[in-house]
Amino acid sequence: MQQARTDAKTASWNALSADHQAKVQAVVDGFNNGTLDIPTASRQIDAVLTPAESAAVLAQSQKLRDAMKAAFAANGRGQGGPGQAGAGQGGPGRGGMGAGRTQDAGRFLLSLAADRDKWRAAMQAMRGAGGPP
Image 1 (cartoon, rainbow, N blue to C red):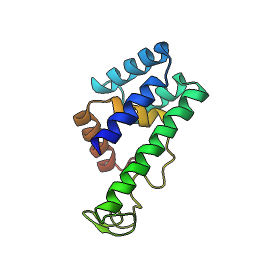
Image 2: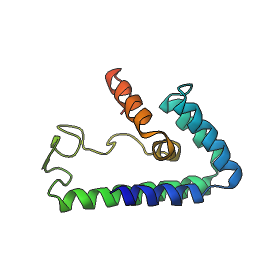
Image 3: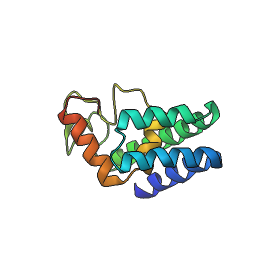
């Protein structure tokens, strides 16, 4: 699973121009140092990307989701089946893996490039505050 994530990060990053890599990294740094929240940072990253860059990043996002689904299915925890979180991957009524939320390239890039601990903490804070997962 980690290899699929690493591959998605590398391919997504390589799809960006050098200038856009620097701009996205600046936004990620803002998130990591606590000056930007997930929605704001995601919007700023989306504003930097060209349509072609966004499409390439979203293709990597789909590829990673497909790899995750395959891994869960191989472990008997596929979508809709019993798993660690109960029915489905995200627990009852959730549908798993960001169901109900449109995937965007900015959020996906942020999730890959941000400090993992800061990302997790921000996600937990958003869930606790009733914000989008």
